[in-house]
Length: 290
Ligand SMILES: [Zn+2]
Image 1 (cartoon, rainbow, N blue to C red):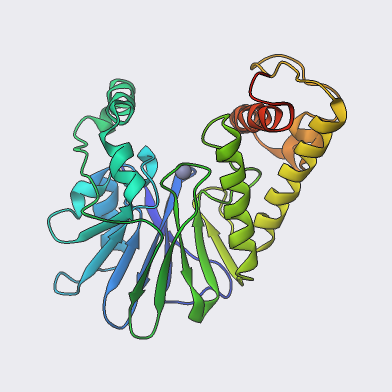
Image 2 (cartoon, rainbow, N blue to C red; image 1 turned 135 degrees about the vertical axis):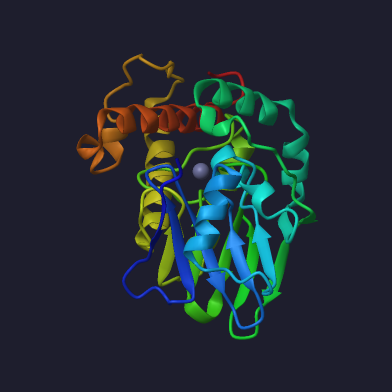
């Protein structure tokens, strides 16, 4: 059962529609003068079709699809649009698509939930390496490579509306770095700085149901605080799940509002935090520390 619904935010232009799949993920639909753009295809072709029905997409209007990155909840709906649309993604997405891990996630998830049994994975059909501009006439969509959460991550900037579709480069309460390689951490921080420098009025996220432009800055402060406290500690600390973290290094010591999250969400973001902490420790204390 798909339960996708239309959502928006106060002041968000009516040409931009948020397609919300419960707590799982948001995709975004943008109607320009020349064509429609769908940023992400949600988690199954069925959900993606239901989402396109909600925005009453017309069969004879050109549709361009963007895959923000190759995480399951953002592109498994591709089969719903592959027959009619170009699917644009970063070149690193094509590399990730070929990775056996992508099919492994599908095997695991379809064994847990029959909803995923019929998912046919479809690769992006058009890739770029730095940036792309989609000239919609009234609106421009600039696709920006914003790696760090994943190597292929793309955010979308609509300058006329001062609106950034940040997807997973920004997340409330915190985003997650791709690996404990310090290079990925640097990429994520650079991507956050890039998004902050846009001075957007709306920063629309894929998780967390917010378009608050302050989240990117808060994510940056989190990583700065993490680096400072890890530096002050003067040594690497064990960060395995379940282990106690030193004073000041628990997620709730650094970010407000963690205690208000549900228990599963707290556990979920604690895993993100420990991944970020591992990368920070390696970045501050060197590659040998874990
Ligand atoms: Zn995501």
